[in-house]
Image 1 (cartoon, rainbow, N blue to C red):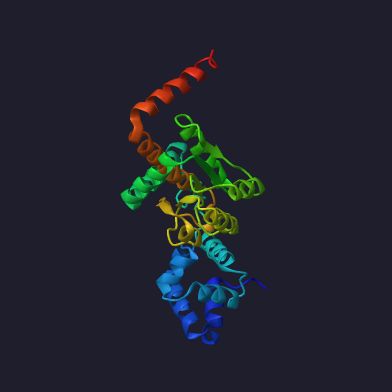
Image 2: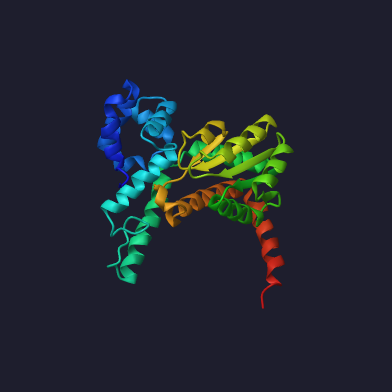
Length: 284
């Protein structure tokens, strides 16, 4: 027998739900497709219930948790619109030029949304923490670690105390020895992974300050961070690691880098010149 749709499961379970769970069901029946882009915190706020209610609601419908529930919504959306590509816009009928124009629009839209969401005070505070830090440790998990490495590489062209730390074990070892003069620059689109929560609890206990780049400022990870920088670009569960989402985060890195540099522009330019001279001998 075919697995019932998300909407079918909600309908079948509706009269067995608690009053709070019915609030969730009522909201989802009118906003089901949108839910795949919401964090559990955002959905709970939209429904006027606690996050625990969302988790119970998902389990009552037969899903292992909120992530599995969102994945089911995303699969349902794909079945209802099979011509859509991974970005939700590209189709098999597009020419290479047409596909390029659509992807360009998606990427520039992500940057524009990030700029619209930018909190200048948060950017300035994050830059202040980085400028005063003894050491800055750039971390993430999975695809987010690639962004952390990119950030460490960019900042290292000016400042020698930026380090990319890969692997959950090495990250845990590093976190255990950080102190009040250090800063953790962490990348997590969801802000809701177990790794980020475990790591942040360790560094916060050490007095280390945390800057988080994420899509969801109300996520569990964001609640533990000292400064949150919000990126744009919505991602569904079937669109993990999209280029627009990465570009939006790299745009924040670029803003942060330039904000740090302009606080000591003369030294930043001198350091970049020295770096360029050191690399010049590598070229033919």
